[in-house]
Length: 205
Image (tube, rainbow, N blue to C red):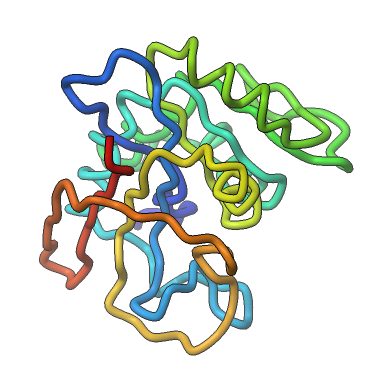
């Protein structure tokens, strides 16, 4: 029996062929009514099956850096210590992808990192992230709606990769911040056998 592990849909993107510098992409699995977790803080309804997981793995291969809030980091840290022995190939694959990427965790309370290639920043600095984007050769992804909200407000988000789950949860943690407007162009979409749909949007150039 496969042990359940955290869903990886909070991070990851594929690079566009014409890209020459990294882009900052917000990527999440969300309910049809726009929540990443329900009122109880759970997201079982968003767990990807094998088809979706393999798709997410392929998307994450080009990720250079993850920007994460503390809560999202504490969810994803399980991939660092996952016992791969009894896991299927696609689970082991994502664990390797996670370990190979750099992580920046924004937290005022986290004392130290529990994963390799990880550093902690005490605050989100828009200027520092803009400089990171300008020098990055690979894409940067941002995970967690709270942290992403700061990037949206600073005008740093270049696109959104959203996997929509076939569920309406009614309330909970919203995927997108209030009072932020951003026009986007649809690049691609894909349907999965479990009813999930992937939609990829980018800011117009």
